[in-house]
Image (cartoon, rainbow, N blue to C red; front, top):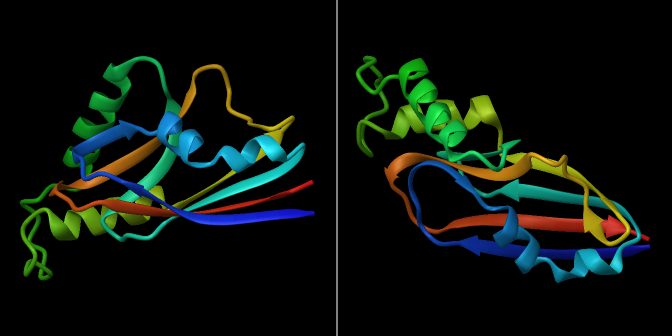
Length: 139
């Protein structure tokens, strides 16, 4: 049994849905040492999230942004406003999408569908670097 853990630091990104598949894979060369197992990604933040979706056509990511901004509008009368009008909506969006993913590993590679990619969903206008705690376990 093999176990690897590390923190992946992603540079700050603007509000939006950002394809990070290649960044994650480059940061985790240990995956190539695992014949079969799992890669767990846990985002260490409450105003961003992780998801898997269409990784080829960028219009999908733009539509995600438009939809989520309309689903959770900043104009709602939130009481948690100390950190800006985008903060509480970002917390709600983060909870809706979630902060973790578990991906299978087979033959030293992450298993994703032909059109799938890993997204960092940045819900703040001006974020800081984002950290993902990665755990790889397998044989």
